[in-house]
Length: 113
Image (cartoon, rainbow, N blue to C red; front, side, top):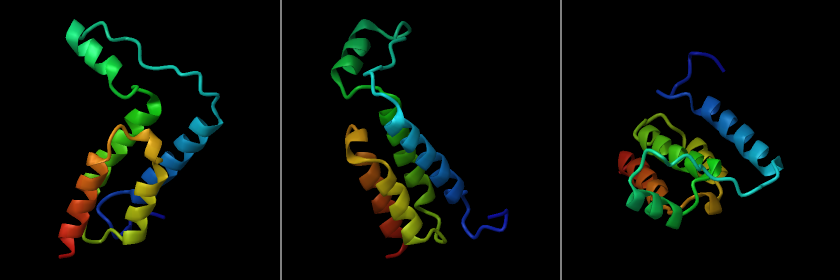
């Protein structure tokens, strides 16, 4: 793949990085580590974060990918198979909620209606 890609975004590159991350995360012994440096936040914000879905690397990547999907969904040259592949790579348990994914799907569908 070179610079002559038909899409506006490097979907294949992001897919490879995401695949690599998911394999590395799967192979890594899950020790339950979370982001613990919350010193710059207010006390009530810290409580809100700790009571919400854990801020693990997987959940942060899932959020990042959902935002990326919403961005690339407006590319009319993005093939459905590539879009589906990115959506499916992030496992369901990785997402704290599905709002970002559904937003991206809505944008993608609106481009073809």
